[in-house]
Picture 1: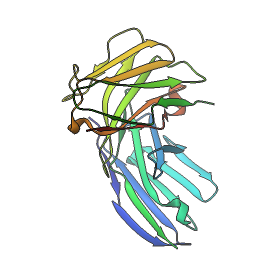
Picture 2: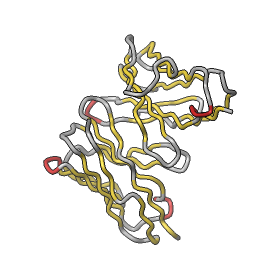
Picture 3: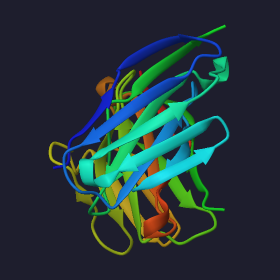
Picture 4: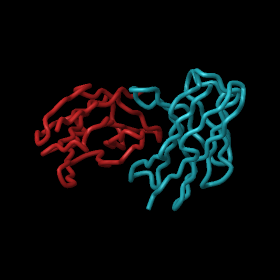
Amino acid sequence: GIQVEQSPPDLILQEGANSTLRCNFSDSVNNLQWFHQNPWGQLINLFYIPSGTKQNGRLSATTVATERYSLLYISSSQTTDSGVYFCAVSRDDKIIFGKGTRLHILP
Amino acid sequence: GAVVSQHPSRVICKSGTSVKIECRSLDFQATTMFWYRQFPKKSLMLMATSNEGSKATYEQGVEKDKFLINHASLTLSTLTVTSAHPEDSSFYICSAAPQRYYGYTFGSGTRLTVV
Protein backbone atom coordinates (compact mmCIF):
# COMPACT_ATOMS: atom_id res chain seq x y z
CA GLY A 1 0.00 0.00 0.00
CA ILE A 2 0.89 3.66 -0.20
CA GLN A 3 3.29 4.92 2.47
CA VAL A 4 2.92 8.46 3.82
CA GLU A 5 5.76 10.09 5.73
CA GLN A 6 5.49 13.42 7.48
CA SER A 7 8.24 15.58 8.85
CA PRO A 8 9.13 16.87 11.30
CA PRO A 9 7.27 14.72 13.84
CA ASP A 10 7.33 17.51 16.41
CA LEU A 11 7.80 21.25 16.11
CA ILE A 12 7.93 23.92 18.79
CA LEU A 13 7.86 27.53 17.69
CA GLN A 14 7.44 30.96 19.15
CA GLU A 15 4.28 32.86 18.27
CA GLY A 16 4.81 34.82 15.06
CA ALA A 17 7.23 32.37 13.50
CA ASN A 18 6.75 30.67 10.14
CA SER A 19 6.85 26.91 9.58
CA THR A 20 6.93 24.37 6.79
CA LEU A 21 5.53 20.88 7.18
CA ARG A 22 6.37 18.18 4.67
CA CYS A 23 4.50 15.12 3.41
CA ASN A 24 6.16 12.48 1.20
CA PHE A 25 4.16 9.68 -0.38
CA SER A 26 5.36 6.53 -2.06
CA ASP A 27 3.06 6.22 -5.07
CA SER A 28 0.80 8.24 -7.34
CA VAL A 29 -2.39 9.46 -5.73
CA ASN A 30 -5.58 11.12 -6.91
CA ASN A 31 -6.32 12.86 -3.64
CA LEU A 32 -4.22 14.64 -1.04
CA GLN A 33 -5.55 16.56 1.90
CA TRP A 34 -4.09 18.43 4.85
CA PHE A 35 -5.97 18.32 8.14
CA HIS A 36 -5.60 20.00 11.49
CA GLN A 37 -6.75 17.93 14.45
CA ASN A 38 -7.84 20.16 17.30
CA PRO A 39 -7.49 19.27 21.00
CA TRP A 40 -10.99 17.78 20.98
CA GLY A 41 -10.07 15.36 18.21
CA GLN A 42 -11.99 16.96 15.39
CA LEU A 43 -10.32 16.89 11.99
CA ILE A 44 -10.50 20.21 10.22
CA ASN A 45 -9.95 20.03 6.48
CA LEU A 46 -7.36 22.65 5.53
CA PHE A 47 -6.70 21.88 1.89
CA TYR A 48 -7.75 19.46 -0.82
CA ILE A 49 -4.65 19.65 -2.98
CA PRO A 50 -3.73 16.69 -5.20
CA SER A 51 -1.55 19.08 -7.20
CA GLY A 52 -0.65 22.74 -7.47
CA THR A 53 -0.72 25.52 -4.90
CA LYS A 54 -3.49 26.93 -2.76
CA GLN A 55 -3.65 29.63 -0.14
CA ASN A 56 -6.10 30.37 2.64
CA GLY A 57 -5.14 33.27 4.86
CA ARG A 58 -1.94 32.49 6.72
CA LEU A 59 -1.89 28.94 5.40
CA SER A 60 -0.79 27.74 2.01
CA ALA A 61 0.02 24.38 0.51
CA THR A 62 1.88 23.08 -2.50
CA THR A 63 1.80 19.57 -3.94
CA VAL A 64 4.30 18.41 -6.55
CA ALA A 65 2.63 15.21 -7.66
CA THR A 66 5.41 14.16 -10.03
CA GLU A 67 7.89 14.24 -7.15
CA ARG A 68 5.43 12.80 -4.62
CA TYR A 69 5.52 15.42 -1.94
CA SER A 70 3.41 18.17 -0.48
CA LEU A 71 4.28 21.12 1.74
CA LEU A 72 2.10 23.02 4.19
CA TYR A 73 3.21 26.54 5.09
CA ILE A 74 2.02 28.34 8.18
CA SER A 75 2.98 32.00 8.46
CA SER A 76 2.84 34.26 11.50
CA SER A 77 1.95 31.36 13.78
CA GLN A 78 -0.63 31.86 16.52
CA THR A 79 -1.18 29.78 19.65
CA THR A 80 -4.45 28.56 18.14
CA ASP A 81 -2.43 26.89 15.39
CA SER A 82 -1.19 24.35 17.94
CA GLY A 83 -2.26 20.77 17.39
CA VAL A 84 -1.52 17.91 15.06
CA TYR A 85 -1.34 18.35 11.32
CA PHE A 86 -2.05 15.31 9.19
CA CYS A 87 -1.39 14.69 5.55
CA ALA A 88 -3.71 12.09 4.00
CA VAL A 89 -3.67 10.58 0.54
CA SER A 90 -5.86 8.23 -1.44
CA ARG A 91 -5.86 6.45 -4.76
CA ASP A 92 -8.48 3.72 -4.57
CA ASP A 93 -11.09 5.46 -2.44
CA LYS A 94 -9.28 4.64 0.81
CA ILE A 95 -7.64 7.58 2.51
CA ILE A 96 -4.35 6.81 4.27
CA PHE A 97 -2.91 9.10 6.93
CA GLY A 98 0.64 10.01 7.75
CA LYS A 99 1.72 9.97 11.39
CA GLY A 100 1.30 13.71 11.70
CA THR A 101 3.33 16.69 12.81
CA ARG A 102 2.65 17.85 16.36
CA LEU A 103 2.94 21.64 16.39
CA HIS A 104 3.21 23.62 19.60
CA ILE A 105 3.16 27.41 19.39
CA LEU A 106 4.48 29.18 22.45
CA PRO A 107 2.97 32.55 23.48
CA GLY B 1 -22.35 21.82 3.05
CA ALA B 2 -20.75 18.36 3.14
CA VAL B 3 -21.31 17.67 6.82
CA VAL B 4 -20.78 14.31 8.49
CA SER B 5 -22.42 13.95 11.87
CA GLN B 6 -21.22 11.33 14.34
CA HIS B 7 -22.92 10.26 17.58
CA PRO B 8 -22.32 9.84 20.41
CA SER B 9 -19.28 12.04 20.93
CA ARG B 10 -18.37 10.26 24.13
CA VAL B 11 -19.48 6.97 25.67
CA ILE B 12 -18.49 4.97 28.71
CA CYS B 13 -19.61 1.37 28.90
CA LYS B 14 -18.99 -1.70 31.00
CA SER B 15 -16.91 -4.63 29.80
CA GLY B 16 -18.99 -7.17 27.93
CA THR B 17 -21.59 -4.75 26.66
CA SER B 18 -22.02 -3.52 23.08
CA VAL B 19 -21.86 0.04 21.87
CA LYS B 20 -23.27 1.47 18.64
CA ILE B 21 -21.77 4.52 16.94
CA GLU B 22 -23.68 6.33 14.20
CA CYS B 23 -22.26 8.23 11.26
CA ARG B 24 -24.60 10.29 9.12
CA SER B 25 -24.04 12.34 6.00
CA LEU B 26 -26.36 15.30 6.51
CA ASP B 27 -26.50 16.99 3.13
CA PHE B 28 -25.23 14.42 0.67
CA GLN B 29 -25.54 10.76 -0.10
CA ALA B 30 -22.63 8.48 0.65
CA THR B 31 -22.51 5.03 -0.90
CA THR B 32 -19.19 4.54 0.86
CA MET B 33 -18.11 5.56 4.32
CA PHE B 34 -14.94 4.81 6.21
CA TRP B 35 -14.26 4.00 9.85
CA TYR B 36 -11.01 4.87 11.57
CA ARG B 37 -9.52 4.23 14.98
CA GLN B 38 -7.03 6.49 16.70
CA PHE B 39 -4.97 5.69 19.78
CA PRO B 40 -3.64 8.54 21.94
CA LYS B 41 -0.96 10.55 20.18
CA LYS B 42 -1.09 8.23 17.18
CA SER B 43 -2.34 8.53 13.64
CA LEU B 44 -5.67 7.39 12.28
CA MET B 45 -5.81 3.76 11.20
CA LEU B 46 -8.40 2.68 8.68
CA MET B 47 -10.53 -0.12 10.11
CA ALA B 48 -13.08 -0.77 7.40
CA THR B 49 -14.89 0.55 4.37
CA SER B 50 -18.65 0.63 4.73
CA ASN B 51 -20.63 0.00 1.54
CA GLU B 52 -24.31 0.85 1.25
CA GLY B 53 -26.37 -2.28 0.68
CA SER B 54 -23.47 -4.72 0.88
CA LYS B 55 -20.92 -6.11 3.29
CA ALA B 56 -18.20 -3.93 4.70
CA THR B 57 -14.60 -4.43 3.69
CA TYR B 58 -12.29 -4.81 6.68
CA GLU B 59 -8.61 -4.03 6.84
CA GLN B 60 -6.17 -6.74 7.74
CA GLY B 61 -6.12 -7.45 11.45
CA VAL B 62 -9.56 -5.95 12.19
CA GLU B 63 -11.98 -8.47 13.70
CA LYS B 64 -15.22 -8.52 11.74
CA ASP B 65 -17.19 -10.07 14.57
CA LYS B 66 -15.89 -7.51 17.06
CA PHE B 67 -16.58 -4.45 14.94
CA LEU B 68 -19.91 -4.86 13.16
CA ILE B 69 -20.63 -2.37 10.40
CA ASN B 70 -24.01 -1.73 8.85
CA HIS B 71 -24.65 0.71 6.01
CA ALA B 72 -28.39 0.40 5.54
CA SER B 73 -29.04 3.69 3.78
CA LEU B 74 -27.23 6.26 1.68
CA THR B 75 -26.89 8.57 4.68
CA LEU B 76 -26.22 6.27 7.62
CA SER B 77 -23.46 3.89 8.60
CA THR B 78 -23.15 2.34 12.05
CA LEU B 79 -20.25 0.74 13.87
CA THR B 80 -21.10 -1.61 16.73
CA VAL B 81 -18.35 -2.62 19.10
CA THR B 82 -19.52 -5.96 20.44
CA SER B 83 -18.62 -7.43 23.81
CA ALA B 84 -16.42 -4.45 24.49
CA HIS B 85 -13.23 -4.81 26.53
CA PRO B 86 -10.92 -2.14 27.95
CA GLU B 87 -8.51 -2.62 25.04
CA ASP B 88 -11.30 -1.43 22.72
CA SER B 89 -11.14 1.97 24.38
CA SER B 90 -10.13 4.42 21.70
CA PHE B 91 -11.21 7.34 19.51
CA TYR B 92 -13.35 6.22 16.57
CA ILE B 93 -14.00 8.52 13.62
CA CYS B 94 -15.90 8.14 10.38
CA SER B 95 -15.59 9.85 7.02
CA ALA B 96 -17.20 10.13 3.62
CA ALA B 97 -16.55 11.94 0.36
CA PRO B 98 -19.37 14.16 -0.90
CA GLN B 99 -17.89 13.99 -4.35
CA ARG B 100 -14.97 11.83 -5.21
CA TYR B 101 -12.74 14.62 -6.39
CA TYR B 102 -13.44 17.14 -3.67
CA GLY B 103 -11.90 15.40 -0.71
CA TYR B 104 -13.16 13.66 2.37
CA THR B 105 -14.99 15.10 5.30
CA PHE B 106 -14.90 13.63 8.80
CA GLY B 107 -17.27 13.25 11.69
CA SER B 108 -16.33 14.75 15.04
CA GLY B 109 -15.37 11.37 16.47
CA THR B 110 -16.48 9.16 19.34
CA ARG B 111 -14.35 8.63 22.40
CA LEU B 112 -15.10 5.17 23.76
CA THR B 113 -14.04 4.17 27.25
CA VAL B 114 -14.66 0.61 28.40
CA VAL B 115 -14.47 0.09 32.15
